[in-house]
Length: 166
Image (cartoon, rainbow, N blue to C red):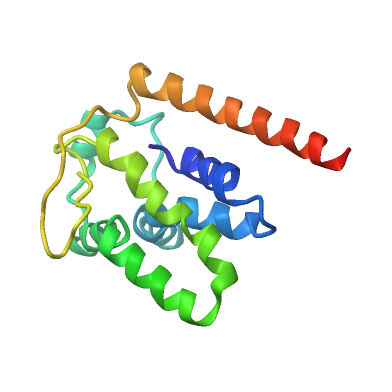
C-alpha cells in the first residue's frame, strides 16, 4: 500500500480521539523509517534522481538497496515490533495506544498487498521470515477498492461528526 493511503487509513480509523496527528504518523511510520530515511539520505547527499513514476521492474533495477533498508523495513513491518512498542508505551502513556494501533493496521494492509519479489512483509520477523506472495498494491484490483474505502471512511467520519454536533 502507498504511504499516503496508510496515513489516511490511520487518520480515519484511529485519529478521531483527539490524537489525529499521531494516528497519521503511526499509519505511515513503517514506510517512513525505511524508504523515507533512504529518500532523505539521497536528498541530502545529492544522489536523489527522478525519472518519472517508477514501475516494479524499474525499482528492482535501480541499484542494490543498502542492507539497513531491508533491516528497517523488516523491523517496522513486524507485528512483534509493533506490539512490543505499543505494550511498552501503554505502561507510561495509555492515551497514545489508540493512535499507535495505526501501526499494526499498516502491517495488516501491507501483508496481502506486497509480492515476494519486492519487499515482502515478514509479519513475525525476526522470529520468522514467513511472508505471503500477495497482489501488488499498485494493481487496479487493489488501488481502486483502497481509494474507494478511504472515501467511504471519510464520508462516514464526516457524517458522524455532523451528527454528534447536533
